Length: 370
Image 1 (cartoon, rainbow, N blue to C red):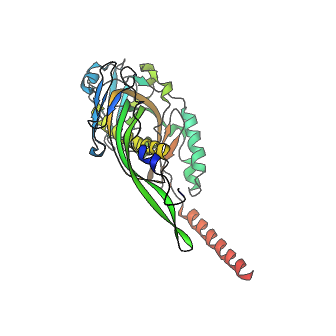
Image 2: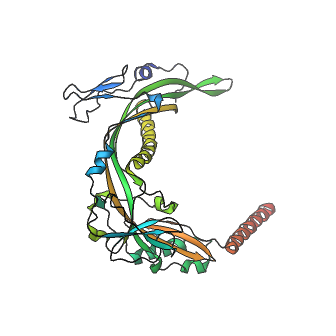
Image 3: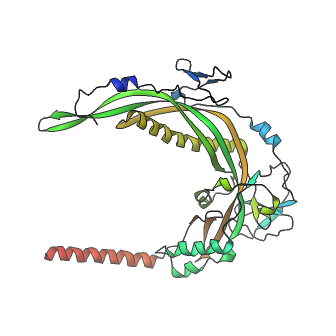
């Protein structure tokens, strides 16, 4: 914040356009030349050219051929598989042909039936193996629910290890190099003396430029049938431990088949990437100009070299009933992160409220007598 109205704005004016001379060519790594009038980037070494959208268009430009990518992908799971469909929640699960399943792993319903397999479904390219055992998942749940102060004591004993179903869930992961053109208003606060005090004012300037960021493994849960919010809350995996798909990893576990296609998954990924880029651009502006305020940020993004993986990742799912109501929970089969719902005892809540009220009354009496 400046101390007076006459602070020097020269550096800010000179820096109103971000320096883009260090942008690298995605093909050869050489420095590219950026033309702000035509919004194009060009590499003099390999001939690479790239047109960028205007910041206020909210548009995206992408270079990807998902159709050919799908054709090249394997559809062979390595062993004969069968599917069951839950008539209660709509969840569809794939099992090895030798496995049997009498209930749905998503909701616990026994109203399941086999369905015809679709041989045109892409086989996974990689697997994140289970690292958390069934017993460990149950113990993590017990530790989690014991910390819930208002949960009835009986409910804390309702979910045993046998309730946990190990399932490999489908995920798309996307990698891409992003180049965003942006514009924003940046404000610099300064003090103006008014009478006996000071008034804060803001001097506004426009800035614009280019922001690059490589997005690595943007994860999208590839299911439209399963709506359990706990799954998304625990879907963070260490993909450095990703293994090439082998049917032995899936043996003994179910695997949900993807119902969110590759194209639709990419649309979901771009929404998540946009949120990341917004934070990155604001941080970049802050580091360059050190403004007190940033407003009216607009940006558009071009996506280069988009690649994807279709992977399976491990989740323990469990559900239990208490007083006739079903409660669901999920445990990350790699990290142990847990998310779920738990019942609340109205008696415990009432006692806690009564104790709080009593404490307030006591404090007021003590203050009144002091």
